[in-house]
Length: 429
Figure: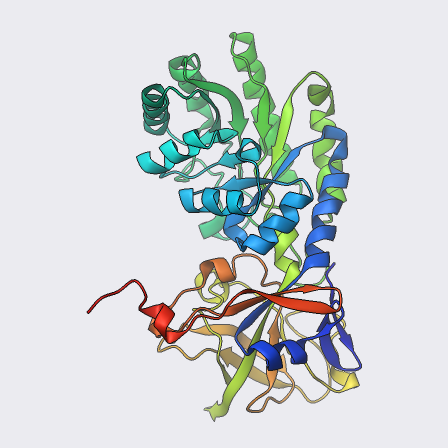
């Protein structure tokens, strides 16, 4: 669900017209619905309530301070993958004791910083990383906890760039190496290796890969416990899907109904569960607004050239990802009732929605049936709340876009649009 709806042919977010937002702050513009963030988090929390997980929001998918503060106030922890994300999450009011720190390439400075903040848990991804973490913990005299990221060799059936649980992944260690890892490092005096971490990829649109990976993890935990290791944490990672197309992703309750029965008895015996959701909370809570600068016909194709492109939203170009795109203001007959790759509506034209960059790969939507577009039209690119602004760049020296948060019938800027001076602020001639 989300709070973006057409009212009398004009798209609104909660109680605010998209046209009014664009008129006030310009385009490109990311618009977020605070109510959608709250509802998505609450539904996930309620669905998994029988196992009372620590829900650590994936900062990398949507890192604006205002968004992180909303989730922190709802009781979320944070899943961070860099020192900068740790800094952001704390600035948003988060407690580092409720953070987990993942990532294959943590630098010495980042590890030391996280230790000094008394971060809740390190998710360790290699033998060398553990040795380095233990060395720095010993040097600083700060004890900490860690979970070993294990690759259960499960195929989540997603894009190869976002599939992370296969044996050949750069993340974590093979399931077969996990027991030897604990034998080598499981009794370190400064880093308590007490958990198993899983993250098989994203987005995952079925529950079967989770059932398979959790089952393998529990078998490993039983083996380790029998050998005398204390395993008190299972971090299931994230990867739950979002509706890039209508009804594409299972509901939070469907994921929970599959996963909770495997873990309920373990939780009653003291096992702590961690979840690291990202796009399932954030994706449908955000829309990218972009203006059509020019339209043209080339061969048999129509082009809408917009002020947003791959520098604003990288996912279509980088992953071949689908985002539903539609004008914000249309006649009643052209109001979309589903977000799909093909809509059967009168008067549509096959159109390429592209950006302003000097790159053939600069596009937001390819080969789409859209209403006839004109210079100055406003388009909404849906499901842009996750991996949108966080992956934006200044390529071709385009300033980063503005971000807006809608709360009921009010909106406010939560990140100012960059200026040309901002582009060169850190440079010198």
